[in-house]
Length: 579
Image (tube, rainbow, N blue to C red):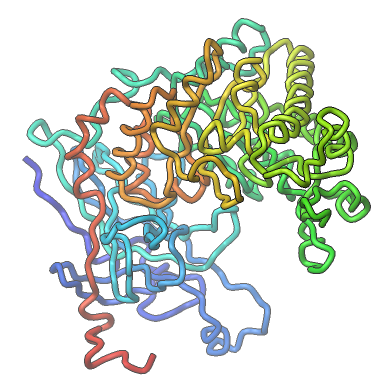
């Protein structure tokens, strides 16, 4: 049996000309270190601080140069679990890219990010309270190394921009054989969900409808709210779903979304057998007359003067005060959004996602809404409690009529292509809360207006809200009951966004027990880089195997502390007491 191998001297990386014992522009810096778990060596570092600009007499504003990729010889063969040790250095960032790695035989890099948690995520002591000398070790993957080397490169930020920070301290290789099988050992091709066919370019109605149906067989939905800025980044964002249980990607199209970047993502998604929907957030209509930055944001989000030109289309409070967003009670607002949806569908997406879990409710106390209620019931809704059932249904009906228009538009665009386009909506955490905020999920499902119902936590404390805002199994079961005979699939958004792999496994088991069809991952762009957590996330479609994987989530993440750095003690009783 092979032995565990720890490679802690990264000064063996090649070419040696890309390494430097001190900070050099465009090179990796080597730092000597020792840890409290007995691992010591030289770590790779690259970072940018303004002090370096002064030290190098560099003109103000001139860019820095990232170091090139380097190769770390592993000098082993056989199957190994690969663990990566990193020094986070700063306590300011909870997550974010830390390093790019790939094996020599891989086509693309994997982005490895920070995995810290904060109090709102829950009581996860192993990922909380990091200090500036703490180290983290994360499980990356199991691989047959076959004399492959490890390629290391500086990362870009989530959206494809150089960020000038990178670190890798050591690589730990744990052998995998018949006595200790690989983590999450079963493969999709053996017992997991079958991949949906990579044939969405086939325009025959039967094939496309089959694709729409098979999306659910993968059970996992990814949500990318803010799109990347480059085609290279788009490919990276999609490639992370290779050999996973994901079947549907919701791709943000707001702000400065680029059609060519989106088309690259669509093409790549189809190569991986994924469906990909355009995602639209009504919150793009944010504005404020008193804070100019909000008006700038609104223009940036929409590329349109509708926000500043038509304050009369805002939602109104019961007191008649304007809110910061637009009301679907006005036909002009509906028409604007329908035009936006039609525009992005033309890029080639397989369907449309509306993030109705943001900027809710979509109708309030606007004059036409109030007047039609008075005409029907003879009472002014502004004098009624917010949870008056007549008033709730009256407003929800307006939104449902708009959702019917979206369904008609999607069907018309699909008919032109000879296919069927899907629809996905984020709802509140319960049917009652959804309806309270003008989202009539039961009707949308039963009328076939919504193909995918994604249940999201309700981030509101509005008076009269029927249920607390968290996702609970009993509330998910209410969606399953409200669906009736509809083929609409129901997914639960797994929260919090940051938690250990075992937390994901337990949440998935709890939610699946409610009878839902799958799981969704809000802000997948931030989760996919948290390698030890992603190793579990990517397999959450294996609902039948989750019970068996308790022990597999052990040892995916561990932390240690630097005892020395560059030969200097890190004991704060004696050293680094100057702030």
